[in-house]
Length: 362
Length: 214
Image 1: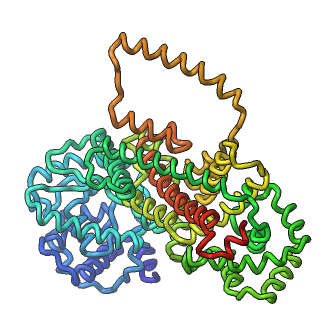
Image 2: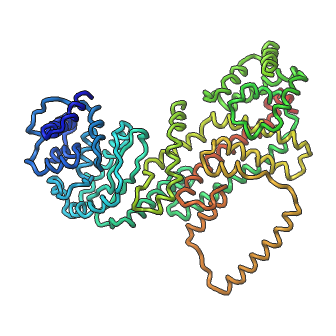
Image 3: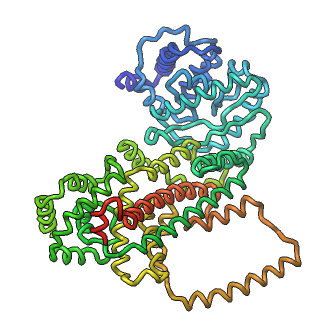
């Protein structure tokens, strides 16, 4: 961090050049473990730089990264700090795979001439890239500064690995991403921008892109629903899947209705002391609006009656509970004391302990 | 599971905000679109894990038991009346909605809905009026050409009526609510079957349990 601040303090042109040197060294260090087969080195190096310097370096001689010998070394942690200080619509990946992907797919906001590596791609894609640039600047009116976060980078890495595979398999289709991601360090899972895959020959105006994004959203949700509802995996088509979903919801609601009828038919003379057993630790449970009506009044009455003979039967009743529910680790606070209570043998000691506890509560 | 639940609890406010602001962003397609694709899968998987966890079911069962006691205590009439199952159903739904901790629309709608009203006179008044309206519309429609909405939209409307509180919801949000609602309903059915089996059918396997309850 000290080196970085030292770099930033200088306001001369030399310092600016120094920064670029550090970045290039940084990038070389990153790219060494995962060398890109394409000539992406010079291009990817540009991605690490702010737009002005990138344009400078573009017009400078090729492979600037190979030539310079950097005087100082900036650690990875400092880089995001430096990069965040510049505004811009750039991705700031800290991995070679990401750099590669960004090299292929991303578009610079301030750049007008296609980079030298883009010539490697199909000419249509390049022209599409050029065409898309002004639109991109329009569609990204406000650029937020972002810092790279590791979980986002990791998930992105997985995605880029998949995309690279797909890209290598499908030679003809050139894909490019529509928007550039600004990643916030806070929530690693959320992107403020939507990534839309635009295939070759597809319309790239904002309406169709918006529609495509909306459709992809809907399709993602439908897929989840299909997994949830049994028997929907084989059905194709939104309408039929919706039919199945509606049937499933209706059947579930009917089951609930039937079960509520069955439960209502149960003999209501259930032991009240079980209730009081649950009440001892039940303050943390969400009982605010549901059971608050008469419960605080009722329970002291029951306890005053001293239904001790019911306690022993309760232990057995709760023991019957346990094999049904399984011995799962309960996260809720109030569950564990109950389990500890349940683990007692049904004996007078436990019953008296319980009653003492309850009386203390009162 | 504990770490997963902490993850569930932490980003949930942030991931739910884009859901509520998505109608605004949909109206301005040129502006920033809030939701990334990853968040849909992440949200849904978190919700699904939430409703399928054993602890959640246990908590629900216990709460349901308590509310059932209250309902049955308040209403000690013989079980021939039709209002008791309705009250039981109402209580069960409310406990389920409370278990959702108000993160979803349907849960909030359930919790804010009034208790069932058991006055039969009102029901008879409503029915003839509704019937008149329907026949009037039908005769009109037979004369003119039938204009049907696209099938998907019709079904989406039906689904929106089934899921509480989702009448005027956009289609993707409706699907999301339906996902969570289905998971919650499945948990409710599981818990209630276990309870019903325990309370009503637990006579022979364990005689002591039957004794304590009868």
